[in-house]
Length: 252
Image 1: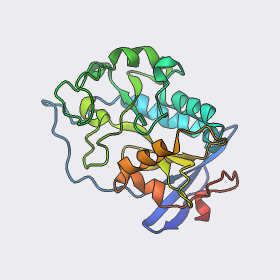
Image 2 (image 1 turned 180 degrees about the vertical axis):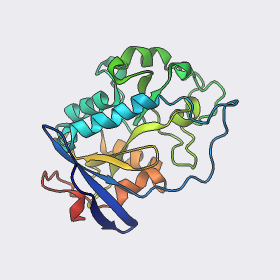
Image 3 (image 1 turned 45 degrees about the vertical axis):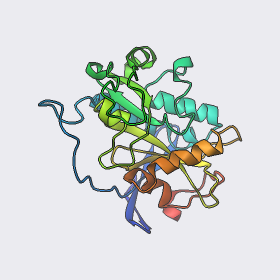
């Protein structure tokens, strides 16, 4: 593991840790996270996020490191498949919507006990009260990541503190990673970041080609998180809008 790199930015001091795999090397930067001011109420005597499949979530982090920076800088279809693989999801018709629009961009690892939660009480605003995903989670999750399952859930409501989205409220689970499209130097929204539940930057990518999700969808994705802890990693640096394999956070 390489030594810790110090990077100064407008919002404070971030740290970049260079991680190497046998085939690839990636640069990951930890962004400043907004402090949580209050927690969601517990469900009975259980912690607020007792639905998190933590072992599986940690396995997702490991896969992100394995992919490295080039795994998120391929043509968009391949980059999206890499994100599915990292998140423990099969590439199949049921997962076609994952990361393809502005909203279905929260990769969540949840325990079997919460698979069949459906937002029946309407606690997640803007989401159907029959948001039944249990069968899809069971069928599309890759078993090798560990106990529980994965799904790409809706981001709506994540901009509040605490987040009031499907992951945190319907499934009472922490996000493994959230895909956020970055405005960039010229508002092209060609680069994205993957951030953790606390807003920490896990990885970034700039897919090649012109078959990205529509620009309006990418802009709307950022608008949902703007002003929250999940937007900080997307706005601290003004990355180049065209992928440069020699570029890293050290140069900001």
